[in-house]
Amino acid sequence: QQQVKQSPQSLIVQKGGIPIINCAYENTAFDYFPWYQQFPGKGPALLIAIRPDVSEKKEGRFTISFNKSAKQFSLHIMDSQPGDSATYFCAASSTGGYSTLTFGKGTMLLVSP
Amino acid sequence: NAGVTQTPKFRVLKTGQSMTLLCAQDMNHEYMYWYRQDPGMGLRLIHYSVGEGTTAKGEVPDGYNVSRLKKQNFLLGLESAAPSQTSVYFCASSPHVAPYEQYFGPGTRLTVT
Image 1 (cartoon, each protein chain N blue to C red):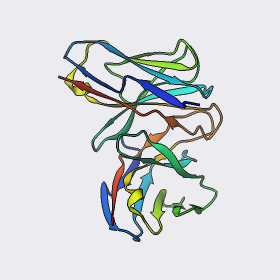
Image 2: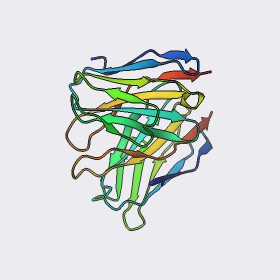
Image 3: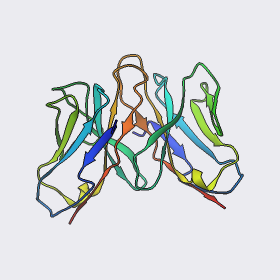
């Protein structure tokens, strides 16, 4: 059972475009939603994370939007650059008592020059 | 700080051979994890450890064993490698306080022929 569904699998945008990656979860106990960025040949690295007490969080050009009632969250990349080309993973966990991260299957983003 | 390191970076095994992957972290993290990454499958948790001397099964534990004899090291063993274990393996560590941000190593690319 996949608890975090991520879409699309791949995405191509032009430089300056705003790619949007969506994730949906099922487990209502989840209360921590990070996004990881992975460049080819590297390990994933934390990009930005949100908790359900806020509906939006911005860090630089990266924004997470969160809809608790719909159990969905999304990543927006403003003014995308070729250097943003990477695979992006959403994830979720519950922090009340230890639990592991559940990852989405990833979105491969290509930003063309 | 080196962060999370993995040894080896690449390995080719024949079916039935055994090997051990080593993960080391210098951040004094309590928690450590082993994931495998396959195209279109995202990151799947194999085993994890919440402290020295403890291990637990993740989503895809079959065919793997782990040990955490020292806090800074987490070993992943394949006793009898199979072609289905061809993958990229990532180790990660996290502190023992929420939200348990995970720090990933650079990965080991394993091919089983």
